[in-house]
Length: 86
Image 1 (tube, rainbow, N blue to C red):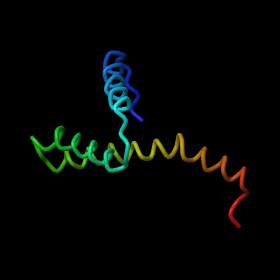
Image 2 (image 1 turned 90 degrees about the vertical axis):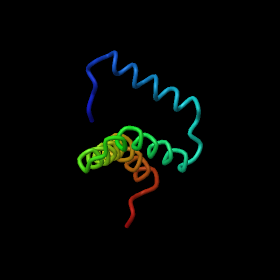
Image 3 (image 1 turned 90 degrees about the horizontal axis):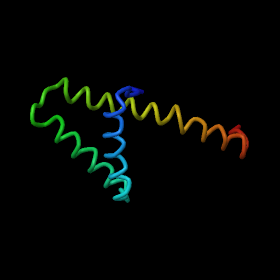
């Protein structure tokens, strides 16, 4: 996960995320739409294979980080609570 050292940039990104959260993305479809719009606005104007590939790679790395930091511990807790699958 790319940890941003520049506190000013980190605060700007945090403010953007706060604005998105406060407007309550309510469905998976809205989240999908928001990510697609982000892609189009960041990449489509100067489209290249590398820009598309890099955007998708960042989404994939974010997915791996979510799995590593949240889903694994959740699954471990549920396994302990409910017993392992035999």
